[in-house]
Length: 253
Image (cartoon, rainbow, N blue to C red; front, side, top):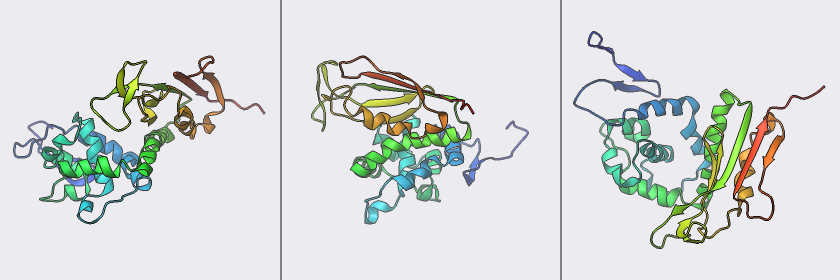
């Protein structure tokens, strides 16, 4: 990539895309191309097409479901917290190509602020898609582990707080955290990967719905053997913290 070479850099997920050091088309988010390469190799966002349901009609479908999900995910990876930057990112050369589909075509753009907003607040918020999103993160992790299965897997289940302001649906006062909030449950593995999550009302007890989060998260564990360590607090409930450890087990013959 020095001055003596003029060879263009290319990425495998889109052969039309060339990387050059030119001032005509500049992006501050070129690092997303590396994420997109990994996505392409593992087929992560493509898996969402089998899980998510598209209820959009007519003009609202000019951008596909998978490209919209990519735009939503990659914008967060780049540090944009909400959809307010979607209008500017819709013409960003890196974002257009990592999103793919219609956005990667010449003279086309990625979805606008209103388009991404409708996708997140209407399409993704449908009950069937909320349930699918709960599973999608774990399925992505399973896809990675298929290439290099871990010898042991530790799952950590815990509740957290997401403070709210105003009258958001489902928000409520929580006496432990002493604020109006949501009270989500998170299931992480020992690598820091989010296996599964559930958004709950702020006044739900810490243990409420824990089975719905933990048990589906163990779907890929049977090949690792039976659980050898199950750490739960002593009664009485509520359960605030739970750790499950699976270790690969030798079978005696």
